[in-house]
Image (cartoon, rainbow, N blue to C red; front, side, top):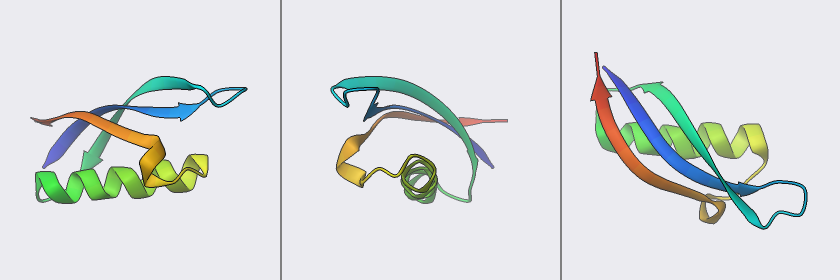
Length: 61
């Protein structure tokens, strides 16, 4: 099942701005999709979890 995760991550040149993102993640549950998003965004951008905010999760076909 695919989930669309919408949220914001703190970054930018100075690191003061919250930049929106949308990520499609394949997972068997909503909770696991959120954890996977934290893991992927954290490793890709070098961010800790407190710099990633999840605003919404929606199952998509």
